[in-house]
Length: 227
Ligand code: ATP
Picture 1 (tube, protein in one colour):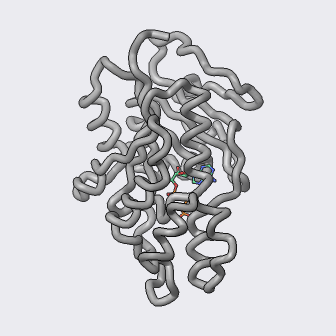
Picture 2 (cartoon, rainbow, N blue to C red; picture 1 turned 30 degrees about the horizontal axis):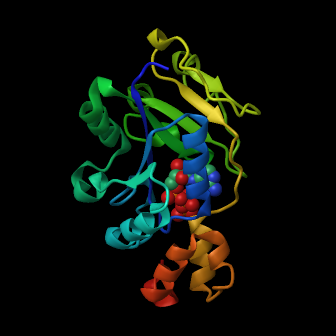
């Protein structure tokens, strides 16, 4: 290791945060020896404008509850407070300049996000700004052919390996790690769908209990809310 802190940034809508997100955060933190993992809820995910999103304050509160017991996991308000700069590339540039040389940064995404990566704003710059960790998700294969050969050279496939990757050849630049350390079906769309249908039976299995209580208390995801 190079003595720098390892900070992971986990962006998303988190509407709501679920067991899959928490498991990804914990496993990635262990596997990559992450000192601090920052959940960064989006103000409005640019590629998800087709549906109303639960107000940021609720999504933030649920993340705080879900991460309360793990000192490595924290929640950032950066995107919620900067709605005019809501693209991931801007967020990563912000954290990179904030932490400077004091930290190695890793952006965490699921394989569904990876499969759309070339639609993200300035995606090729984004992929070289910081390290990336792509986590497998059922139903989404990870294609390495999405990106050009110079980006492909940065890909380190850790499938089947549960080991901490040593930062190999730093001079070659930031890496794109692919890991199958987590394989969970959880999906916020499915949770919202079930709640809208009035099916609350699975809620405590799908989200942390503190989040389930919050959803009940504040009556989120009811049919009339259309989320
Ligand atoms: P939605 O169904 O509303 O799209 P989601 O469950 O995919 O929500 P997001 O908030 O969009 O959750 O996800 C944030 C990040 O977490 C994304 O990079 C996504 O790929 C990743 N992610 C979400 N669920 C999983 C999972 N079960 N396994 C691996 N990655 C996941």
